[in-house]
Length: 455
Ligand SMILES: [Zn+2]
Image (cartoon, rainbow, N blue to C red; front, side, top):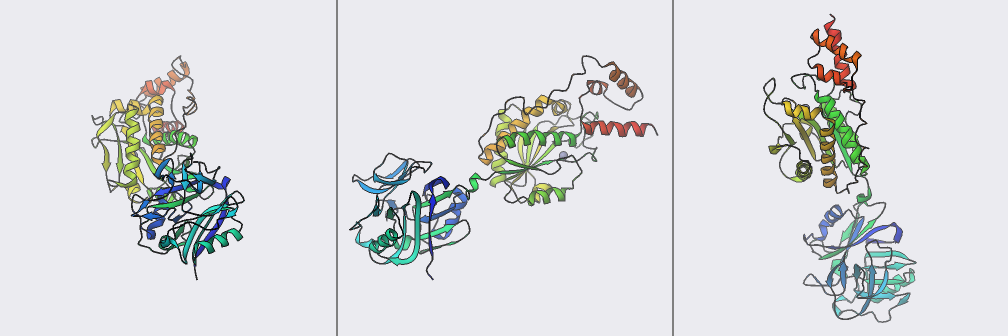
């Protein structure tokens, strides 16, 4: 049975009608790659008659004029937002236009459609036009002469129609995987890609999975002086980056939103369960192999291997981190196929080692509210850039945690307690504890220490 795809779409439901210039040379059998690339809902072929794969009648797409012959002729024209789409005498000032063989102009069937002899006869056909203010299209394997096509469209109520290049270039493909191509190997120079608002994945939210490394059960990953714990930092950074991304309209999932213990397997399972996940970002701080303080320092990002989407994401993040003035390691991007979450996540994945908690200067940064805010913003910016999501500036204070009341002005009770615990050897850094700025997770650790000291 002959395939046929036809319909009308209200202009307000169209995000875009795109004249796609096939510079990559996709043959008709690879039309779905164009859908993937453009995010369109469906596309069909030959919006223009061809000679040597060049446009040879009026054709303009996104303001680029592909062909503008000296003559005037009826065709279809529209601006970027498609809302003024309609029949027009070309050339036209708008950003997009198509001409080929006018069959119906402003409600009137054209008595003698004008076309070259090689376009005549009964052949598969494709046409675009309008019907009652809607965008109308027909792509059919059923063979029609141009005149018969005109009559079919006129009786279907179309009030304007142009026959697009016909015969061998008739082809159609949609997001549901439906379609056909009269000549699968043929490479058309132009396609018409239709972007419906609801079905356009570009209008769907981008998705990011933030993976705060470790958990409060892992106390080994800490600074040598015990003033910094990686799990607390990672969770805090996830919250900060999440705030930025959500403000930009990105849908964010966390692997351990409440700080609970989650295995590496579970983390990957969470990520792999998110349909169409755009990016997985694991958040960590680094440690040098030796125990105690060491000199290794700086930000770096780990990837399973070079190239691909993960590299693009990592480069975008790195660029913003550098721009924010964060110290970056000489080898800022590290390829490591052994890291579990990089190896076992289906989406592009990166693992950020923010700084070394085995370096004194880095540890001060890792503990700093200001530094955390700066890095989180830079990384979120990079992620947004990678996703192609416009950056929405924060109102300044919104993403910063409200300043906790400073204890520096003096909290005699706290100071006395800290002195006592330090004298008893239960805590290492009295200044840190006396400053009174620590998370619930840190307090939890302190309680455990105090309790074990009581034994
Ligand atoms: Zn880690």
